[in-house]
Image (tube, rainbow, N blue to C red; front, side, top):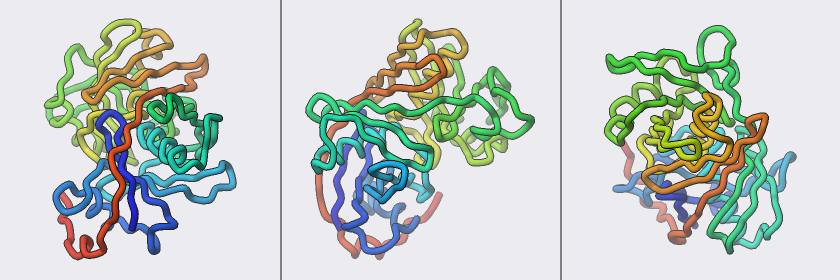
Length: 284
């Protein structure tokens, strides 16, 4: 059972081609494979290429807890690089279908950089989703762990909760991220970004990723946080998003269409041994 491993600013994924995988990929298998002590170790699994009626390729994205994500910016860049490495795509733009919509991708710099049209960001509660009456979720108050935060919610195909703050840290994300991810306001759970605006063209974020936990970088989180900063009038339309793993460049169109550009690094190729699945991983 073959795998390829890549990382995008320290956010690592395994790519599994369905042709190399015997049967459906079960949630328990995902949890074992992603476990860094009992498995290969990763922040998620990209299963593809799959057949699609809407694009040349389709992709399923699995979180380490076995759940599925609608979309992943880093995952899409990695999968694009994988397709390029396999010579399934060249220098021209191509489309990928995800459960969060069809995106367009271009591999640049000999595979080192990938640009993805992530789609349009929406702030409407019924699309994210957020409980309550239909509205744009901007500068609302949310309680978590005995603390009150001002937040904005957004979707770029998957849900995000962005908290603008004067100071952020990894500890803050790890303390309040899991509480906000599972907050009753978010029926499908949510990704959480703790955001500090540096200037009109730069923001910094710490990320708690739904189904994965604290992570060094995220493409969809960068897209959502940049869109919120622009929506609030705090930043221009071209924004560099700084994360512990590195920087992603976001360009925001007039209708909040997102163009994301960032690096991809290949790590390894290998084989998964069947006996690995004899160990059952306890869930938190």
